[in-house]
Length: 247
Image (tube, rainbow, N blue to C red; front, side, top):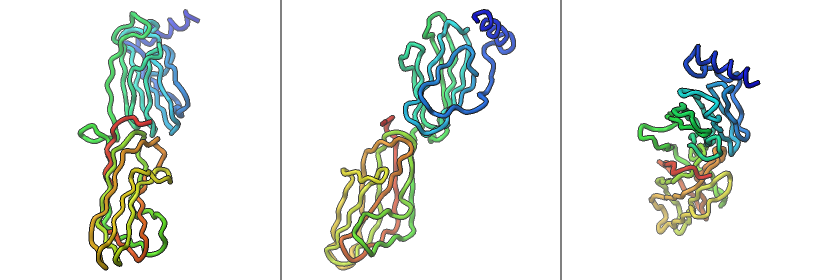
């Protein structure tokens, strides 16, 4: 077996200078850890939405300097990269690309160079979301928390600082309005904000905010309720900035 592996490595080095740029025939669906080796295709693509997926780098002494892997995280989850020893090497944001190149093959872990691109980010490198609407939303029946039209989105995995604000008209004196953030259908308790009208037609703004982690498949919603009478929300917006891994 060792002779066969050595022959494959020699053929690759002769043709390409390191490992060949062979794409995996089928993207790997997120499920546990993908252990790379000298026989692994140099281009690896992962997809899906499961938690806890990772790459494990090969034993560097089985490779040669200049060995390269192109890793594509085409999923909604963060994907970790580990040295062969199991120590953390780095991580990939959802929908990102990382290239790792072996610089020193004299130890099992080796010394690897890396660089990457996040395809869903901004020029600043900070992942954020901005959703807005100016279509009037009216609530005149029921007292339950109700999704404000247009104020829902599903962010990629991470922990986010979230701000919501909107202009609102409360009809009827002493009408109470509650504004809340919901994650995956559950009220985020610290986000509850309340205002009360002091005149029969009360023009004001309603706000809420929070710091909330998401797994990549959970929906953020902004909901509103009223104690009586009716309310109308006009211009409104959500702003989200990713703070870190979160989960």
